[in-house]
Image (cartoon, rainbow, N blue to C red; front, side, top):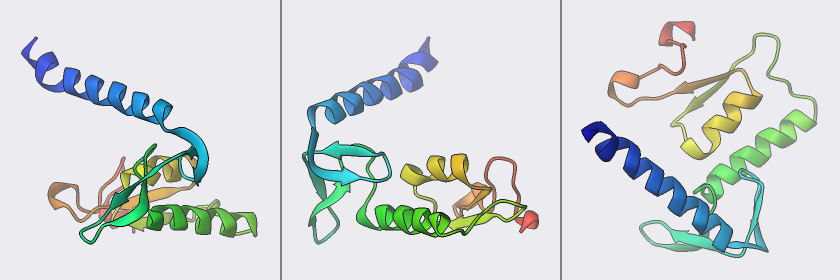
Length: 127
């Protein structure tokens, strides 16, 4: 029971709040190619805050959206990550990692402690 209160319940509350926020901010002023949502507001972000930088749906930043669009356009022009090729991604952004995993032969390279060079069954010696 203690485990549920300390771990499951906070995640559940966070997910419900996020879904409510997405519903409340639906609109057509901004479009996020990562979560493929139209939103009426993007949040400001950064030390020297920049307006309209962070997606209010998936929390992606402008640089994440640019990376996603660039890879999508490269793939549309014939670049393929099939046939044993891997897409190696350094400094993984959570907002786009799941989309990469679903679309590419994807290896996330994480330099954070125990998870260094490891992601979902891949190890650094696979490089």
